[in-house]
Image (cartoon, rainbow, N blue to C red; front, top):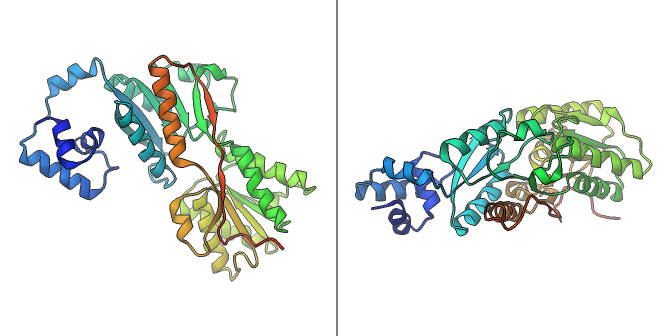
Length: 337
């Protein structure tokens, strides 16, 4: 019995069976148990020599995921898996920590697995020509771009939202609802990535409204870890009791902020409106439901794979795709008067 036979028997994709047999964590326990049971019943033994032969002409596409616990990536990963499988390739998933070097990780698995291409899910925004020279296959930056560099755009591909524009839209929503003392929660305003871009959008919205950016309303958390974000939100509230709006650069940060507001006896949106960017599923099931700029998660993953496959098969060179976010109305922002 081959991996394909096990996949057909279990009603899953070949890449899912491969991930189970290679001990990857991103498979549900029920699917994992079903695949392992089918493999045991068939007395399946991996054929290493055959696998090595395949690797000389690998059909693998690598997906390097930064930030193992980021809930935003779940739908993107599933979309990437479906699109890769549908295109006739196999997924090689590699997860790294928030501080790890994604390019080095990608180059390492590309060489060891003889991959056709790479997708980076989350990463820095300041690659240089010297950084990317270690990559020997086409690659796509998914959910981020590389704006803080002189790297020629024709030397890499990206699929993302316009972070500055969507942050501007989120803050303008608060302004349109009467908020004037709007705080921002972000990991860092100089991270050369989405934090910095979304901070730029925040500043632009305030400046267009004739409001000076107030340093006492800016809270840098240094991390996306919820306990730290919650503490940072409490510090912001203690420093600025007159706060009437909060823009968090991620839904998870907004959720921590809403708890901090609740624990401080402040109602949302009665005393303070809160909005963010992402559109993760869990933020739609909190009270109040988070009003947020929802990223098109599945579309981001699908477009990244299509771009990479087109590059692999010679149908296009590097290209850049910006997809719009959409306002998901919840109950965390005061209604229009």
